[in-house]
Image 1: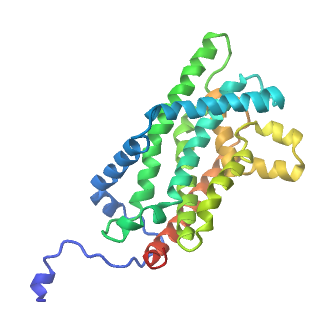
Image 2: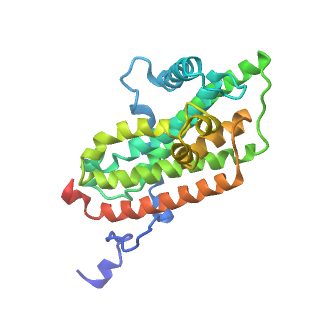
Length: 288
């Protein structure tokens, strides 16, 4: 091939040599594909279901009712003056976004091995599309939360946004980074250890109960053994769930140390997940 002919190529596809390679220029070049995957994730999930997108609403409402009956009525969990149903709905709304990002991202390589083996595009687009598409689900569930928020205010409940309401987008970002980082790590490991794909659903359920989703941190301090209470309190997900409820309901615990501690861990976990993901994508097709 002549030298002149070589210069006609617009792009060169070659193995990545960097540990951390989030090439925004290349992702921007493939933005149409990213939007296509986002659209696919939104449309196809409930395409052949009877209730369709209504499952976005049904799932958090029914879960909140069950949590209220079990943890608040039967278990006498104190929600610090906030209606238990609203307290649980706020926690579940935040938790669902993280859970969806984690569980769907964790199967990136195994679920998309056919397309990955046939055509090139930045592989990180796939988990990014999952994280972005789940924002729509979060928005729908947050609207439902606001509906009941207004309903309880009309009923005489005294509640208001906290003074740190402006941190709300950062809490969403931290949830996305944690879910994306953990998901990319697990997805990379499942190319060799398929048991992880079976364990992820079970582990996610356990993680919910040690992340202060159905109870406030104050209850964990009062009723759990000191070691367990300490683990729950410094769990980054606990800080996010508690901070989310603090912003929306102005109840619970918020500290700047907990906020920055969680932000740093979220960023570091995302970068670590990106390193593992980039390393795995070079050779995963030979082992999957």
